[in-house]
Image (tube, rainbow, N blue to C red; front, side, top):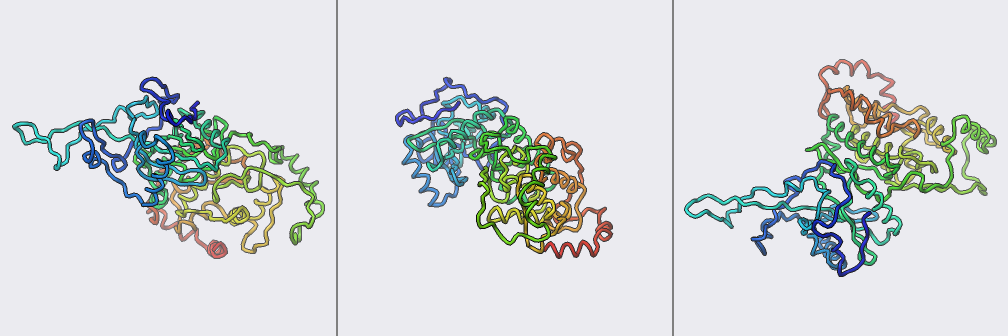
Length: 489
């Protein structure tokens, strides 16, 4: 277990050369550092300005420089251990910085699978030529590649329990493939900094515009592998979204990060939800409810009761808007790891539909209206009743039946017909974005889907059309679909 240390004098002295065995397995995610993300640091013979010349300085805003300076001033000793490079992430509970590990060689870095490749042949720049006597050739010398880490500064507004929980979960997930390992953590007074590996990745705002189905297949194979490892430990990540899965398309691997909202399944037990009961029990209780016996189904309720005697319902609603599963919106008290699979389905829908963000709701009510626009009022009412809730809406544009995923993807991506590979991905999407969490695919089941086991290689760039689908477009397009599309818009 990684400990938090609070002594200012020895704040960075918990690791000595060869004296600390990191408890991480050697089976780390296979990541490499891109050339643009590395800097050629200096060996012992180059100091001062020569060292500065060897660093590829990043363009950093003045506000970010001031923020990093504040961290160095308020956290004693951190500048002796790390060289802060840039701010690479900022959230509700933490800020993440890219930093060079200045004392990398002083520790046993079992978390770094590329520590044997930390040197490369480097030729001095023309301004600092070293020539062999009697020859006009440049002398190639060995330079150590800079080792970067990610420093996660957890805000003091976070509860101590939340901080401890995140570090414990990361410790338990050590050795899991495609899951970010925890190197160590430090504390000074009320400040906590977690040290994590730095993983170069591509911005999702580029991925969703350029990814073909084959790229999506590698992306989700890595994501589902990470989720399978997390869910095997009965851990809910609770915040699956593109910015929390750092994917590198060059090596076709990604890493799952940010376990600030994660928790163990059943840790926040507030009572068993109706969905945990068998179907006949759910139906019996629903038929005996006040809504069924006193409220007319033909007319819609005028509003809320003036004196509602029902007890308030509390459930964990943590997550990011647009990625919350329906059971989270319906305040289910028996949430499972399937909430992460719904969020993964939203990412797949975003990639197939070429729209980001796909759901853009302001609150839970708007989020349920967005879902009802897709699934229809009939399925939304069934899903609500499954959790002992009632769903009603008087929006006339929301139909009763809803739309198929294939039709929705075509409308969203502005194409007339999907390729066979896109249709296969859409079938996986239907299994992920299932309103009933007990029918939704698990991470293990998703990896066994035909999308991965029997892939269809019938892929074209976005906006293009398969050569053999030109005739089928006119046959399937009719007045009914055109009318549905107008109603959808």
